[in-house]
Image (cartoon, rainbow, N blue to C red; front, side, top):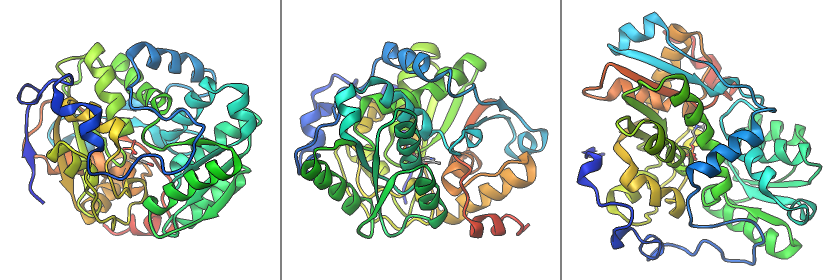
Length: 357
Ligand SMILES: Cc1ncc(COP(=O)(O)O)c(C=O)c1O
């Protein structure tokens, strides 16, 4: 997979007509194929929206640790700040998005029940938030979703519908159920309140460490990376946001590179990164916001998970280790960087694999 190195200065500004929302949807499947009632939009959240999201969730989620480990620094050849989203109550940063979204929903939206599609961590986030707000949640999971994550979603009281081989079919099914039963559809990538919630990771991080020169962010839909770019623009304009994705599910990378929504095979074993097409809203932000986008293979991601376990005493699932894999693959990097350990929901097989040297 070729890598493209760009600087933000090389890219057109967000207002350039090439990046208008219409261009992003050209040639791509429509976002909605059924009547939906949820807050889907192509308008990114503002920095003020992100601060409101932080205010809405901080009493439920303490600030997560951001610190370094001498052995990891030595391996990487720079100071590596690890932002520990694996310590969240659902085991992943996605819980921020569900809680931030729920805080913006009307009583009618909540009473209708929420429906979404996910391979696991967004599912747990919506199930967790729905339970706290007394709403029902229906989660469509693809057949490939890890058993442990599906079990966790059920434990949170959500109805689980297993449908289709990949997220593409699961998303269509969730939209169909929303239209059929009048539920509130929550799009996993094109929901501004969810991006605002995910962005609170970066509000915390850049407040904890305003001196960071680069932040490596794993990308599936790109919602986390979009949030990172919006916060960076306000708090640390010189900090480079670098996306990392698996070569076995490169739809966001290909969309970013082409400047339009692309689809791609979704064969990664790392479920948090398993998307088959770019998402319009995050792409509209990351296209100009990312300084670089690094592609790593699934084995490099598993290697990084082992590095986390051995050198940083940290349990990461594959998607949670992808940022570190990107840093370790980078040919050069600045002296002070952060990697987001986005999730720790490793499967039994992944945990067993950590023991391999
Ligand atoms: C642990 C983990 N890391 C990274 C990602 C990718 O995040 P995004 O979809 O916001 O790009 C996900 C998505 O579910 C995830 O669960």
